Length: 262
Image (tube, helix red, strand yellow):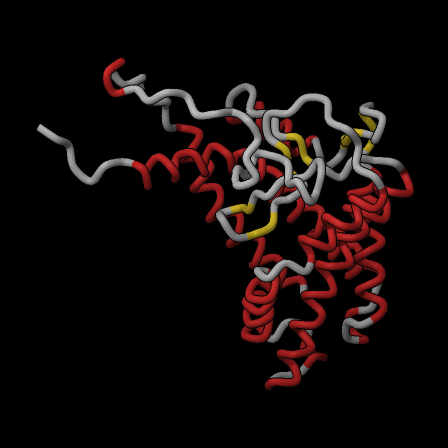
């Protein structure tokens, strides 16, 4: 399992670091002439705007990383917002964990695991692939609930990530990484992120000692899985910090005219 997870994370890091570096290094183009400027868009909340709260999921968003992966617990350019209720925490985690994109996502990860023959105890063939798919889906779902709903509800911590968008690349990266260890409480104060650190440890123990192959049920392997989960979450939260910048640049490229009128 370690080889599979490590290589998956490395591929994720390399792909996104290229995007982040490109987004960070590009400068904002000068404003167009007054004659070409368009009136500012209405900043009122739009259900189709990924930055606006979802009417059915108050206090969350409709956003997706790279227009695919659920990013419902990330809020952009917001100040004080009401805390999520226990029901809302569980509802938004359920919404993301069982989102349609999770099937091809876990299917791809299981295919890589099968090709590498990680966790040989699962075997090969359709049966081995099915076990790997089920384990990957369960691993992700358990961790989502532990870090995003169960522990945040018990400890009254806020599972949402509040994007900074302030400062340069290093400052924003440092802020994003720090959110793994520091989070908001439901009352708006700063507190050690027990939900992430303890929640990922509990989820690693549950998955390792319940349905993974017998040979992998060891304390060192559990600690390795825990560290890998925290590392993956760290990478993901950095991507979440810069995703709005990347999204805007991608949108500008799509909106750019194919030619210039004489």
